[in-house]
Image (cartoon, rainbow, N blue to C red; front, side, top):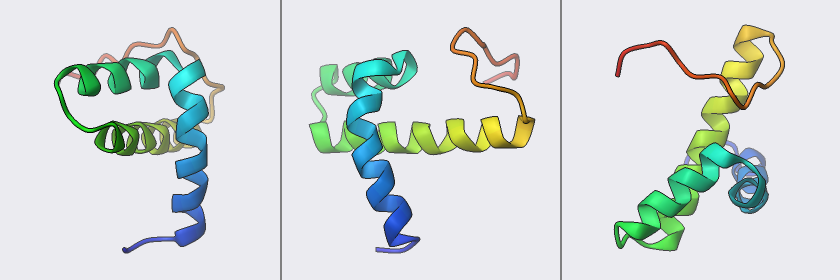
Length: 74
């Protein structure tokens, strides 16, 4: 494994609560499990989403807004 061990452990613990309380994370988890993928893979995707959300909030300097929709093209 590469990366910060403490950060990985923290993300691992946070992903369980995120699947229950964060709408975006729950949607990702449900979508991946519905496709027939493993729950572990879905939890890794949720941890990645949490990491991206935390960096976006830190970079923008604004508080978290659950209703925010990105205007960037995909």
